[in-house]
Image 1: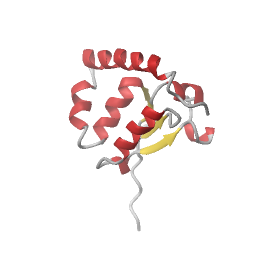
Image 2: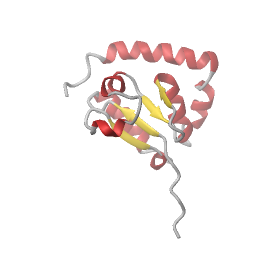
Image 3: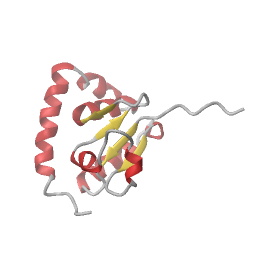
Length: 122
């Protein structure tokens, strides 16, 4: 009898953004990346988004659905992703809560303003 597969967190990213796609490719090459379900929101079937997440919202910000179903976005999604990847876990722990997480989210929102011009139409 095969043991039941452990649920994975699911990361929703905008593959139509060249910078975002390169960053996600970097994460996908890391040890532990097989412990994450990777969903390119620009190309996936809408049913893959699951409850509480629209394509528009998923294209606007990075989202990560935890195995328990909770949906994180922005800096909290990055911090949770980093904690899954062994080489990045220290950064997730360092920036994943409190004032540091809030500052990271402010920086991420600034990046999102710049990103609008880089995204390929899709």
